[in-house]
Length: 258
Image (cartoon, rainbow, N blue to C red; front, side, top):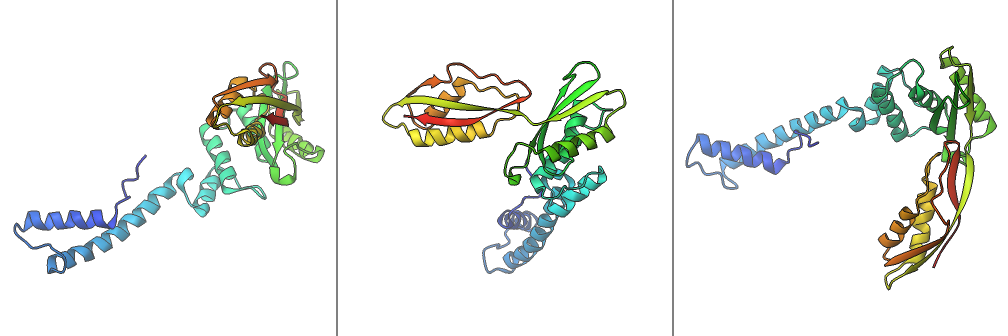
């Protein structure tokens, strides 16, 4: 969405010169004339006001606010940044809270509660994971910790916090690390513009972006090779799409592209 206050100095100056000409037909507005110099002065002052209004309008919304105002938006909703949390991560938490407000312990609440604990990068709720009255939460740790697989202390901290927040109707909650599926990929590409090394890198990056429960589709691997310049790609490993459960996380194993 365009910001109505994004006006350039030249646009403002030209608008003022047109106004001068409309109100004073025949006035000379060429450079170095009195009319031009007055218009330039007015334009400079108005441009400053436009830039200030643009800044103000950006602070109204969390996704365009500067850091101090972003955290003030969070404070209004009772959210404070976790240690080591980036502005982008805090914004994600805040937008999630706004778009999916607390609702008495639904699955989105469990995700918010888990992500409120320092060291948690993302969380995924499995309602009724062990049957009626149970909830499972699968979490990933911040990569800065050295691994996205959470440690036992982090799992315990998240569980303790969720147990403080969850409704009494929930009888049993588990906080789990995902089971990692290390998936090899073997692909043969063809065509004069193929780039096996780049394709291998892109496939690795693609698999590293996976979240628990995400399915690996062979068509996506083929699309990566074609995007990198190959005319065709034949995948021998895996032999079919790899479907992960909500408790499993697909990660790259040995990636071979020829």
